Image (cartoon, rainbow over all chains, first blue to last red; front, side, top):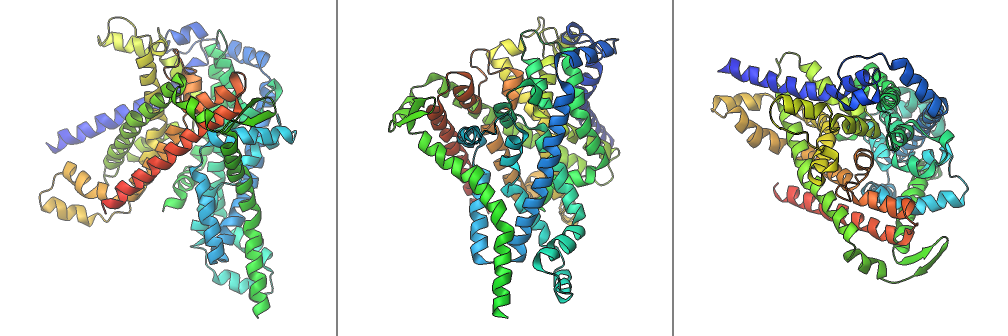
Length: 268
Length: 291
């Protein structure tokens, strides 16, 4: 009885695993096949890989897009880390009633649907002449109540004696933050950076609205526009998808622990 | 001494001022602008106040009704399936001596690293008419003729629900798993001695203990389903007809695809604001009352 039960558990989990992993296999096999083979469900490795890669390089400005995606994700992540950790630290270490109230108000922004914010924001950036720039992609999402909350929660476990000791040594309030808090909290920064990087790297709707010319498109925009063309070439698209996905996969496998920690972050 | 404290308090405000200002500028201010805009109508840069006209139009707009129906349908079907599946998998993976536990967990979580655009297009190609899913179903004799997944109003919704479930089940599963690992195992031993079956233990002990985290996942997935955009745009582009269109996509179309009508688009966006607020309120109320 117990054995049968255990077998059922494994069968179920193996099925779930196969379903989870299949699309990854699909994209890897797909990039070696022609478009017509892909939509016919071919699951054997073909010999179209170099043809697909060459065509992708020919019809898109992939190098530019990769650079654009990387730049947005890296700069966006750095800004997010600085701003949100500063705020989380400020709200927790210099806690007052007034700041608690302000934080309560900021939390409301988590309930604001992006669709309701995007039209006025589009007009704002358009008036500022910032359309079609990476700045427009980075600015709106670099401070989120979620990330501030994340840093605030993690600051709770920060040993305050360290700050006291620093004050005795004559450090100013800002040096305490940059020279004591930041180095001590490295693992927390690592966790936050992975989640933020992924969000920037994968974001679609806002870049779709503000990035308008071919040479400024990020990778998800390239993938999307290839697939929505009149006669999509899936072999080429699969190469683009693999290029988009590999960096996040590598980060995930290198820093799985921090990834999960960043995701669960403020819950624990 | 007092002046030093005042200084510290001022420093505190300096730490939070810039980030708070940015959130006000990029969330609260646009929300306010959007509200104003929802009472206006116009083209280009000339907008006039038209009172409640846009809101009246909302109730007689067939596309809005269709988009709202679709969005709520995804919400009502997809979110429960995903959360229950996530809970069941987490519960199976929580067994201390299960073999290959780490492998299963990583594999089921892995879809979370894919971008929404990429996975949408993978699903689009997997569910092609001559594609791999139809071939599999025909080999297993479950269907005789291929299903035109993305050309059929019902099946295209099914594909979207399957795709979203694939992407997010592992994500929610990790939340449950980490919460389950904080539960003291001795309470299960006591329950087993009292003769409670595993299934019973899941529903009478684990679920109540996980209530805060279940509520959290419910609220976040409700809010993201109400804002669904990337998947629908990339899998079906809203079609066939408007059968899979969501409210967010309609707002996008109103603003950037058709002749721009920012005023009415803002009105439609406030429908989402309303729904997010009401559903979050209900969920918190329901979860709070059962305490």
